[in-house]
Length: 98
Image: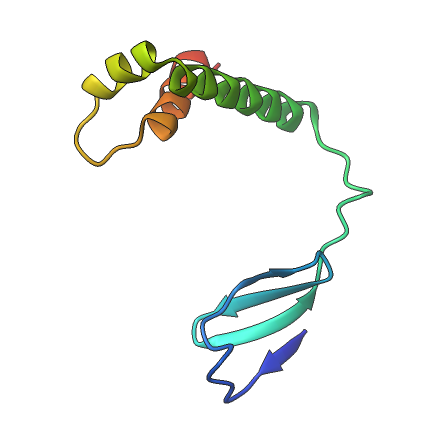
C-alpha cells in the first residue's frame, strides 16, 4: 500500500480506478492499493442466500417504482425525505428475513 503525503488534490478521496487501483482513506491518511481479486472467493451457503434475498428485494423495489400507483401508495406511508426505492428494499428485507 502506497501512502499519499501532502497531496491536497487527493486528500480525503476514496474510490476505484478502472478496477486496477483503489484509493482508501483511513482517518486523515490516504492510501493507494491494488484492486482486490475476488475471483477465487467461494461464498458460503448463508452468504449466497443473503445475496439472493437482496436481489429479490431489488426486484421488488423496482416493481414498486415502475408502477406509478404502487409508488404513490408506498410514498404516502413514508415520512418526508425517505426514498421509495430504499424504503421498499428495507420493507422487503424485514418481511422476508428468516
